[in-house]
Every structure is written in structure tokens, then in C-alpha cells.
Length: 147
Image (cartoon, rainbow, N blue to C red):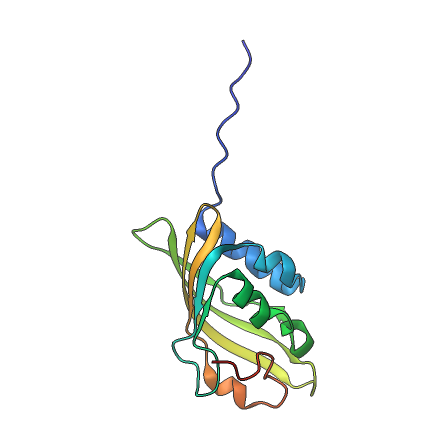
């Protein structure tokens, strides 16, 4: 009797998040955007005036991230801590992103806390509480001033 094939189970939220970080380090923005659901929402509650606070839909996320590697050269995400919640679809992430600012060569060091929800193996909600003070560095304005 043949062994039944187990059903395909979407990656847990923590695994999908780790995979997304690898894609960012590889500068594979198209693949990173491919991890989003069509109607996924990315929010930046601490965004300063003139910066986007909410991106609705995969296409808006893609437009926001398209030029990221041209401005920020990420090297690592040290101090990564992923906290599972009582909802298996949601994780809370604490981390730093380090690298360099492409235009100036200056060090890039950003702290993040993110609340991320995944459904059917895709990001549906991503609230990114990044440090807006880093935007004071020349060359970090990769997203323009869309709001």
C-alpha cells in the first residue's frame, strides 16, 4: 500500500519571516514582494511627516520597496528575536538591520519591532515600528515622500 502524501502546510509565521530576511539580504525584492498576499497591508506607525504610514496591497508594497537596495545595502540582521503569540499566524519581531548607505558609504543601523501576521503562507499584515531617527542620514530616502 502506498504511503499517503501529507497535505501541504503553509510555513509558520516565524519561518516565513526568517525567509523574508534572507531575501532582503540577497536583495531579491521581487521574491520578497512575492511573499505578500494581494491585499496585504504594511504600516509604519512611527513614520515621520512626509513618509508613508500605510501601504495597502502587494503592488503598493512593491512600489515602496523597489529601490531599497539602491539606497540601503543590508549586511545582516543581528539580535533577531522572533516571539510567537497566542495566535499562530502572528509573530512579534525585534531586530537590528545593519549595513551601509549606498550613496554615502555611511554605516546603516536601524532598530525594528514588527508585528507580522501571515495567512495561507503570505504576509497579510506587517506593522513596522522602525526608528525614524535613522532617516536623518543622507541617502536613506529610498521611498520618496508618498503618504
